[in-house]
Amino acid sequence: MIKRSFKGGVHPLSRTHEGKQLTRNKAAEVFEPEFVTIPMNLHLGAPSEPCVKKGDIVKERQVIANPVGFLGLPIHASVSGEVVSVAEKQQLGPKKVMCITIKNDKLHTLEEPMEPIGTCETADPKRIVQRIKEAGICGMGGAAFPLHVKLTIQDEKYADTIILNGAECETHLTSDFRTMLERSDDIVAGLRAIMRAMNCENGVIAIEDNKPEAIEAMKKAAEGKPGVRVVELKTKYPQGSEKQLITVTTGREVPRGKLPIDCHVIVTNVATAAAVKSAVEDNRPLIRRVTTVTGKVKTPMNLLVPIGTSVHDMIEYCGGYDGEVAKLVAGGMMTGPAAPTDDFNITKAMGGVVALDAKEAEACEEGPCIRCGRCVSVCPIGLNPSRIKQYCDANNMEGAKNNNVMDCIVCGCCSFTCPAHRYLTASFKNMKDRITLASRLGGKK
Ligand code: SF4
Ligand code: SF4
Image (cartoon, rainbow, N blue to C red; front, side, top):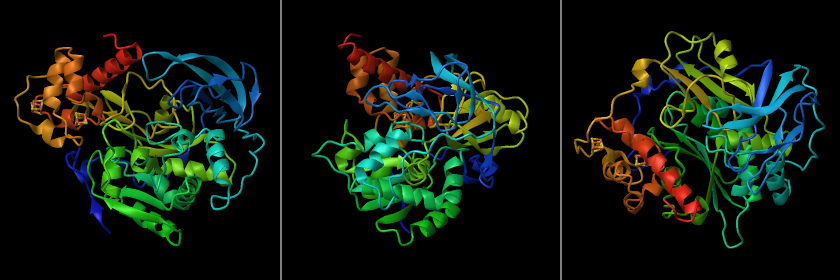
């Protein structure tokens, strides 16, 4: 087994204290909430358009919102019951989002299944891509990019390798790890379906070496499956970042400003591949996911929940908070947004929720740069974060752009390592958003 890595990166915490030990041995437990509140912006692109109204009785798996625009996806009821509201609600972002709230009758009355299209080994390649859209599948590793769009490529382009990201390099999270143990055959079947859809002969499942059980399970599942192999990666953050993953597994570099498909690779996540299997072979849309609830909660767990489950309800199910919580993070500690309250709902791409105490949250005051160069040495993209920050602080968009701020993957390594606690990553994200907005507005600053 070859262990591969990349230049830069950090080890957020030592292996024994990376937080994963809290839940790595906890099999996904089914949690059935009383209500689900499903946001219409579950995926990247325009929010879906609700097609049900207050008072409607819906079946589990029924389409409750229609796709809008090129990136659009349908949204399905994750439980059966009564629609009690269709209204804007606060979720994680700054703006309220249209949400559909369903009172769960716990009867699991099912919508008619989607029309069978065959198996992952026999279905028509075009139908596989259509089915992925019909099933509302987006990347479940955090990006929420609609998978059917990734698989719809222009004629002159082609993919020769599909990479499944099983690195789960963020601290604390073990939802992908548990999925690899508990649905290893489904992950390989889903990978084979994606390979079939893309007429592609190579499938790689990339896993960090702090997950030996998952490596073993996936290798076993891959046995006898043509073209599928497991690649063992060194444990290092951000090993699961798309560009790093492509380089370490294929030796190819995604050119600046280009996409993985430009070097003939498509990357998606292991849980997403399992969802593809369910959609293609079992004719089921994506309505549930495994999410890790961990950190300062009384009983950290992995929960299999309907999309739209309240984070507050999940924390209560885990016994509530364990002591004083200084910060709640949706996703991993390195990149997940801080949530002001636990009043938000699980999306298709939310792999976990981490409650941190004051020491872990470590809210430090920003100090002056001491020119130690540590941020430069850890940046996996080869940027100079210290210099870019000067331009951000000076509000100089051109300077930041010329120093390649748009290549920043917002991984957080520079902020993590900076002894002066400079707010590097936050500044870069803000600058990137401003540059993107300015270019949409026709170059106005
Ligand atoms: S500059 Fe961007 S890509 Fe480089 S370490 Fe910082 S956050 Fe990561
Ligand atoms: S790590 Fe922090 S203090 Fe050191 S050079 Fe970078 S910004 Fe300056």
